[in-house]
Length: 245
Length: 245
DNA sequence: GCTTGCTCCTCACGCGGCGTGAGGTTGTAC
DNA sequence: GTACAACCTCACGCCGCGTGAGGAGCAAGC
Image 1 (cartoon, protein in one colour):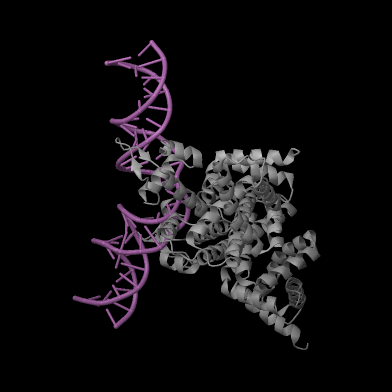
Image 2: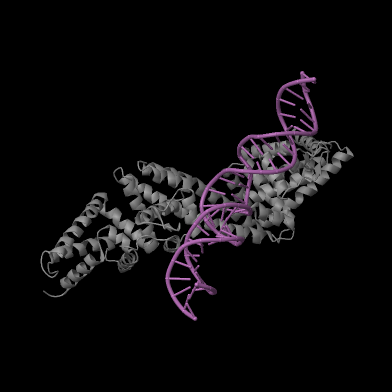
């Protein structure tokens, strides 16, 4: 029984840790070898090795070195409570990871479905997605996704291409000073309303979220050419649609 | 259009970032404000803000600041490839998180089922579990778990209490020098075999894993009092069981 | 004895993404 | 003029080590 004390290298080899890690544990007081040679080499006894195994067990469960030190420090801890707390944290992290995967997967699917996308388009899409996640509830997002699926890729692209044209034509009329109650503004406003309805599906919650978003994020509308003046003009045209001719 | 340039504080407020974070992005060259006041205050232009939004989008997807800088640096990257790589990483992390949750949950269940457990028992159980995860395949672990469920807590405890007694009695006989072919060693060996069979369920894979574990981890057996000499004695007793009387 | 080659030792900096001061200047309001 | 907020630039701290640098201990072969 003379060879029970190990030097760092040996212990590192047996546990799969690095020598540096063992040095670190020594530094922070987590595992101090109970003996040293005359020349200062660390000697780990059987008790040290047992402690190290406990440390590694707790480490596998995701505890920080500080938590491990605290736990091993006083032996009167409630194991169940410790584990349950850790489990709760792990569950939260799991949920976050899952969300992240879903986000990435959604983006990847979009990218695969679309033509090779320019970097700019990609970043713009990303921004739109984060915006959506900010203003729409998860259920609303699911409904929107379902509607997109139902419409099909091509139809979506058509709509996305139509919007800028519609906005441009509306602006023309506004700048010409056309009365919003008359044609062709009535027709444009009707189409405008149709496109919005195609998006919301008539869901009042989604309508509400859409409105909130466009109010809170004016720069988004701005980039699409929907500045406040134009929107006011469109608003008047809509009102005229509802009013009897 | 005179108020489009923002100072750090304003930008921080609008994005939810900290001023320090923006300083950091400046330091590492990720987002350098394109203008400064005469006195050196940072002024973020609309373009800077747009870039920041891109940065935040990519950050939400779990990219590191360095990766983001690289991605935004050259505009010719393949969005799909970038996202797919990130997705792969995220999936791996998700799998790890899930495993961790399962481990923690298994331990929590054990702790809830058992009486209030001492810290030492807890750590010992942990060690046993990590050992098991090392030597048994996931399917084998599931089978073991199922068999435990079927046996019930109390039966398991009885067996766990019986083992040390059985080992002690076997050691007595060995030290008395009893012929392993005779009673009462035959009875003890028979019981020994029964207990092992109750554990393995006769599954040859599990039998194999059990053997591998006890060979690779002699200190585990040692702590239970099953030293090499005793095991050799048991082995002889087993052989006598199989041989005709 | 001396060298070779391995293991051991003690500093000490580095990573990522900032938090958190310290200590000083600028800008704005009363 | 004076308060107070917002800005500035260092610079250290976190966590769990990796990765050297520069030197001493230790067994084996010449």
